[in-house]
Length: 215
Image (cartoon, rainbow, N blue to C red; front, side, top):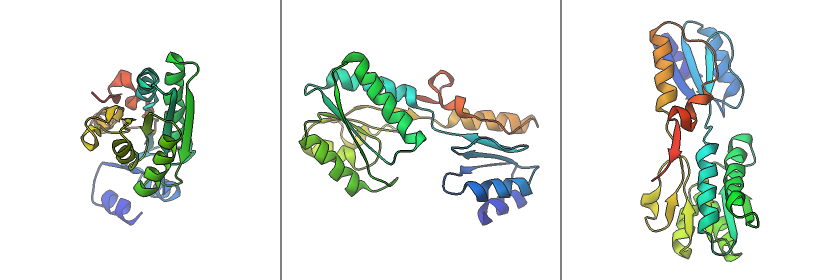
């Protein structure tokens, strides 16, 4: 909250950040500076008058990735290694499996949660276990999974950004989140003096250019 206060006191008109680990502090600070526009990544709703929220609503390309995984799987078993069972993660994993089921109703799935947003060794270990159990296409919702896929020579779906460089022959595609439309909209409203507390989630959907499939 110290850094947030410094920005507001420094005359910045728009402060962007991530409130997931600091919901209370972010909202409390925003309240103290009603003339500043705040736009934070959050699982909760906006707060009047000046606290807007955004989130990674990239389940559409996750679904499309599932369609591809379902078609590419030869074993009929696909997997996903993800952070934890929270809505922001569940909607991506569920969309991925929904896409796979669309092209192969008999597809089998394996899911593992590592209980952390960043623990590549643990994610790799979970991925190896799935691959040993027959998974031949895996959704790398977390870092560490692609490494396992490369080692075991199976296919992987990346997440959030295009991670094909981690395994050019392994990573076939993946959902990409582009923050630009969200940020652009916020700046436009601040410039016009009409920024309000709203949910900017829509701007990370495919229709607004906020997400797409990696090539």
